[in-house]
Image 1 (cartoon, rainbow, N blue to C red):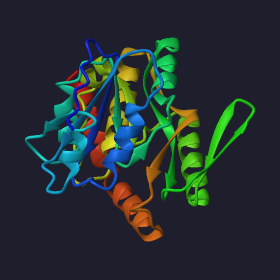
Image 2: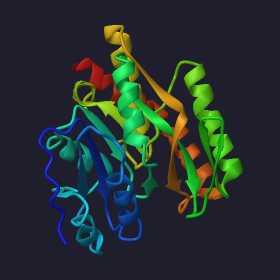
Image 3: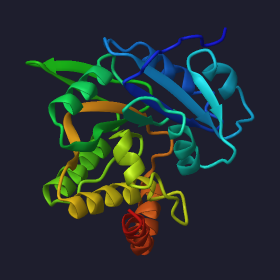
Length: 258
């Protein structure tokens, strides 16, 4: 089976980078395809030359692009050139969204004209989750309860202190703003792609004195905890803070060219 969905003028473009994601990509694409929303949207999987069945699976549910070069930042920038939506959702291949996710996101951007970009809260999961509602709010509990509390607290206080940071597993941004901010820049290692982009947007906001970015409090996604461990988390934090000045310089360089 091959994906044949033809969208005349999509309002939203969902871009998913992949490399050997055969175990995760189907569930992610099913979740994106099953959105309950009236506006048209398109789905693009941009692959870094996988050698497993990622492409075979992706072609059943989405448009597929083969990136000339492997690497998350390069793949995403490459796919944006083909994107037709005015709002772009960058979604990791192991991240799941609920059926009303795009509807909620689109409504938020329509209501808040000064919102340049945002990320939903993310919760680590291992394939199992408990869903419940309190009033009209929907909540999800996973086995990574304490890790998720830490992550939510971290992003909450960063926003509160005026340094909001977008989450790499899901970044939603207006296409014109993405282009103006210079797209994604690749730091010396795989860390900090989302951090550099967040800083670029903050510099953009200061330069033109308009707009904002934020983390959404009551919209969330589930992302795989497959790589999550205390040792790895500590290593990544140390690695980031030892090179954070490089990320700041990259973001400034982007804005100086704007």
